[in-house]
Image (cartoon, rainbow, N blue to C red; front, side, top):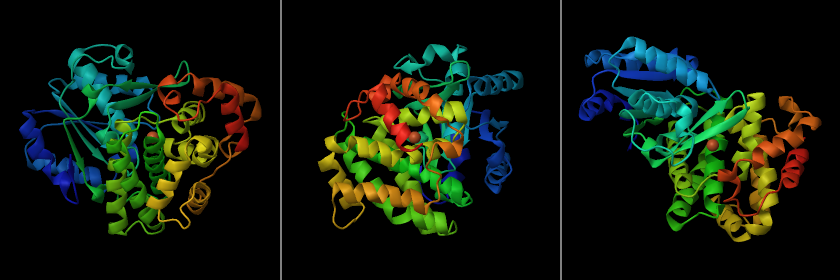
Length: 368
Ligand SMILES: [Fe+2]
C-alpha cells in the first residue's frame, strides 16, 4: 500500500512490476467523467499500456454488474489484470472480477467466509473516496437482487496486490459524499474498537483513525479544497479499513445493509443513520471503550455519554438525514428488515452486546 499525494502516478510502474500487460479498469459513471479518470487513462496511454475500460459500476453493485464487467473482459480478450478506481462499489467489483476472470467460475461459489481457494488475477485499487477502506480489506460486498440481501465474499486471498492511496483523488468529492463516506470510516473504526474480535493492533489503528476523523471530517465537508483535511481523511479511511479487517464490523453494518439492499441508501449514509442509535444500544457493554474513543476525539469530559452525544452532533453537522422515513422506510417493513439484519451472523455475532430480532426492531423504530 502506497500512501500520499501523487501515489497514483506509480500505476504504470506497478503494473509492470506485476508483469501484466492488459488491465481492465473498473469505475462508475461519476468518476469516469472526472479529471481523475482522464489522468489515469493518460498515464496508461503514455506508458503504452493497452487497457479496457468498464465504467458501469453502480452503487450497491448487484451480481449483474459483475457479470457485465466479466462479459466485457471476455469480449475484449487478453485481459490479465484488474484495476478498481472509485469508492467501495468499484473496488469491491474489482476484487470479485479478479476471481471470476482467473478461475472462470460462478461468483456464488466464493460467497461467505473463506470460500476462496486461490487468488484471482493481479489487482490494483485506487480509492477516490475516504470511507470504505476497501483497498485494504479482505471483503467484497455485492447485492443479490433476488433475495434483496447483501452478500460478502470474505477471504484474505481477495486482498489487492497493490493499493495506491492518493488523497488528491478525493479532492473533488462533493460535500454529501465526503460526509457519508467519512461516517462509514468512523463506523469502521468504532466497530473495530468494540468488536468481540478486537485486539491491540486493531485498536491502535482504530483510535488513530477516530482521532484523525474527529479533527478533519467537519473541515473536509465544509471546505473540500482543504488538502490537509483531505489527507487526514484518506489516511483515516485506510487505517480504519485495516482496523476492521482484523476485527470485523458489527451491528451497525448489519442493520445498515437492508437500507442499501432494499432502498438503495448509500452505504455511508445508512451507517450514519444507525451509528448513534446502535451505539446507545451497545453502551452497557462498551463503557471503557467509549471513554477511550471519547479521549481519542479529545472530548471533555471523555465519558461514554459525551462520546454518544458527539456521534449525534457530528451527524447533524454533516446534514445527513437520520430518520428512516426520510429514505422511504415505513413501519410495516421494519420486522422484515430486522430479520434480514439478524441473518447476517458474520456481523452480528462479534457485536459486544447480543442483538435479537426484537432489539433490531427497537433500534429501527428509534430512528423511524
Ligand atoms: Fe462500511
